[in-house]
Length: 210
Image 1 (cartoon, rainbow, N blue to C red):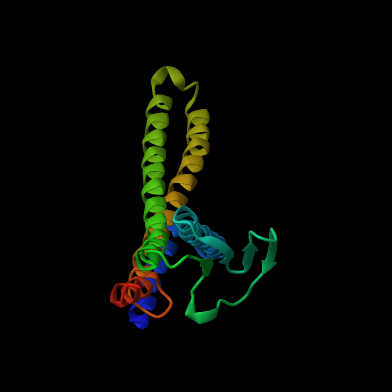
Image 2 (image 1 turned 90 degrees about the horizontal axis):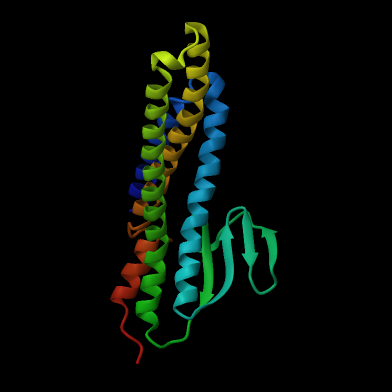
């Protein structure tokens, strides 16, 4: 199952790179695409782990550590440290927390589910933002191409190029983040070692503590 998860995430990464390639094409844009994928992956992972942490906090848990590689945050000491590896097969990061034993099985399942849910929510928000930017760009172009708005053809083309590039970059990056975050959320629901899906499945099979 872990191999399937890696294959699916590789497909997501390829789609994200292809999406960013429409704004940053060619060999010249390769480094920018790689840096953007790394940055967007960090953002999506951060949102994922904050989803876990928020659910744990709501359910009465005590947050001991939030790790989003290569950073680790301990709320108790309020110190940010560097962390290059995650134990136990975790990918990208994890949240360490403590819960009381009252209804702990259900709480652990909800906390595990909160990470992918946060990713899917981020995907929905960024997809909406991309749609808004696309509509906003279309409105700008329609308004700019009215005869009264064009003092000359050369000035019109230069202005249209400038307003076209701004919304396009934001729109494409938002689409890339939506694909990446949604992919991370869905892949994490698969039951492979270290995934949220595995945690949920293990808690479902465990006997309730009385």
